[in-house]
Amino acid sequence: MARETARYVGGATDEQSLRTLLKALEKIFISIAAVGAIAITATSGAISQHWLQSEILRPSAIQNAVILMALIIAVRWMTGLYRGVVTGFESLVWLNAVTVAVTTARSVLVIPFLKCVSNTPAAFFVYQLIVAIAELALMMIKAHQLIPQKLPATQIPKSNNPLTNIISFSTMTALTGAVWVLITQTDKLYLSGALQLKEYANYTLAVMVAGGILQLSAPVSSALLPRMTQYAANNDLPRLIALYRKMTQVVAVVAIPIVLTLSFFPEQVMFAWTGNPTVATSAAGVLRLYALGNAAMIFAAFGYYVQYAYGNLRLHLAANIVFSLIYFPTLIWAVKIHGQIGAGYAWLLANIIPLALWLPVIHKRMLPGVHKKWLTIDIGQTLLAPLIGAIILKETVVWGSERATSIMTLALSSILIFGLALASSGEVRAIVKERQMR
Image (cartoon, rainbow, N blue to C red; front, side, top):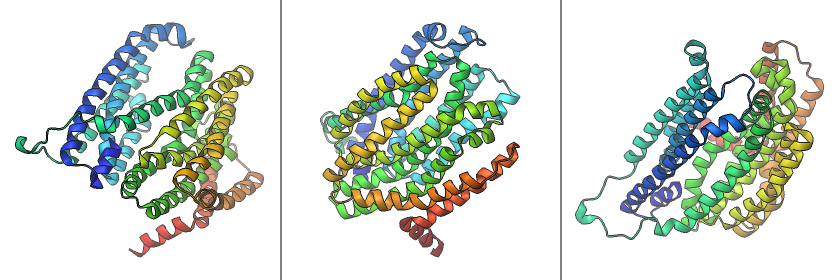
């Protein structure tokens, strides 16, 4: 939906085709949401009794939480369709404002709710369901506002099935998405059954903190994909490459300082966040490995962006299938031998391989002559100075035992590393200078 909306903005399709496509996809999405929610609800009893292990919660409490999760999944699934419309129209200021508000509600405002109203698992998921419904309503209203109004009946062309023209790309997108869900969630699924919930909570906490790196790529892809699609539709390769490299440097300047902070000071980060030294020690190793793996993932994702722009995801799908065939056995073996830290090593290895071996092939086929400059200048040059800074800080900074001291030291260290990354990127410095002159 996002790609077809971007093509409409670029003049490659018409208003009625876009509206007809949205209506067709709405029916498909609603059907899948219903089937998914019913399936999870139907199996919630078995999940609560035979899969998840808890010494504290009753199976009925776990089952109620799983049912609420099913509803949340269905609502968020529908939200993705309308988010695609908003993204395609490049209403990014509005989209980012809503995303910030929703993320704050989910992750921050839930804390006073749990303290003042109820701290049960059921209350937590009811709150999340309310937030998800509010987000869906906002996205749905905005999407229908952006799409041009219906044409008079006499002007509506008699078209074929609206999915006909996009079936190949949609199928590839669906298959790629399915494989990607397996890749990114298999570790959590496997460990949820292999570990006690308390151990699993520490692991999930570390993965969630490291996942903040992935959140950085969401606004970038929202801005990048529609514009790249327009340039690809118009065969404007020079502008496509220029945008591609500029956004790589933007991601590098923002992501690299966070990755270095999480990987060089993982225990301090976890202590600053939780205030619990035991949790910090337990989760530090997992946090470091997942932070590095996620860093490799967000840069490897640029190969997906260019394939998306050209509407050809065959190489991406093939790479993900090969990736999964290597990753799953490695994950199971590593977890059996090394526990949760083994999952971290498997994740890191699985994400370095595509960056090192797959991305050069994509660049050679679709953006010839780009890979060496992209790797050495756009990423390498931006990485060098902050990496040296992080190494020096690692060897010289003395960490206090107080939580407030750790928070302040982390903040100052992160600012210093970010400053070094910003000074290393010519493209980002030019963007900042341009905005200052306005």
